[in-house]
Image (cartoon, helix red, strand yellow):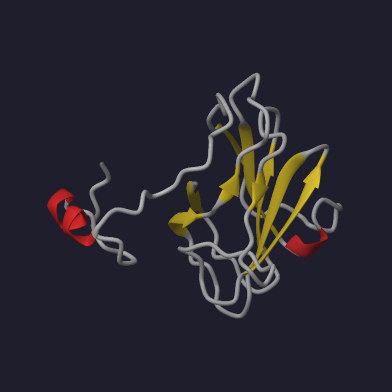
Length: 156
């Protein structure tokens, strides 16, 4: 998922963002790496990402470390798992910036910029596992398939 947002204010240490899933996001979860950490591209080094669920809906916090997040347009890529069941409606999300973001949703986590809500997408059905078929090297070349990480690829 690519999340694009604009902040009006520079966010500094212990401030941050909270992404809250609303109706239609039940069962979605932020994926962690093998060590149980969460990450996203497009964030400054040292941002602490934490996640929880509230009423079965995801809530993701981004706590800024010593490197500030400058005001402006940002694109953050995150990996979510889809729910096991299809959604009955389009997912609704809210993102806001907060002082003392680690204390969200308590009143001591005061808002910095105004929160905004937006529609996500509807999970229409469970996706079956995808697999890359093992084919001989000659056939891979003929099809333009290149299995190296980050390489441009053609799937047949």
